[in-house]
Length: 191
Image (cartoon, rainbow, N blue to C red):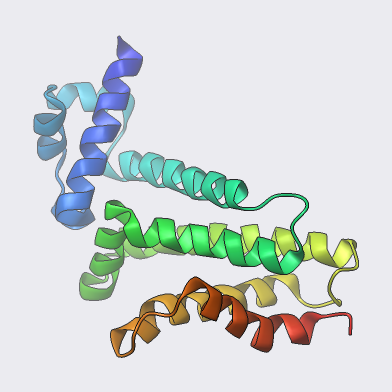
């Protein structure tokens, strides 16, 4: 029964954060949505920050699983990076909670949200860095700074998916792959 209540609280908090954002969500709202007393929440979570952290950690794991499913061991480095990044950002673009947090970070600069979005970005960079290190090890690409390369790849991808669309028609998945091939992978190739 306790595990069910904990999960119920997490689902209610996710719904509240998705609808109202971090700053506007209160423990009273979460209790009301979960249909539990506020005291019940505190038996599982010390405060709103701890509850929020639990939700974001789960979200990061979900994103990583989605990216892992999109790639397979027989794919080339290029395919793994493209499929993994696309899946992560597609997930981020469609997931209601991340959309709300992205807005709150930009519009309000809520410190807890900035911290969480940084944690999210760090997790994506670590994922890419691991792919890059593996590709270097397998002699698929030349030596490079894996963390800096992962950062550049993520920022380029975000720019092509989110920023470009603000004033231009959205790029197709294949167009993004082609841009990456031209600007990133040719430079990393063992050529």
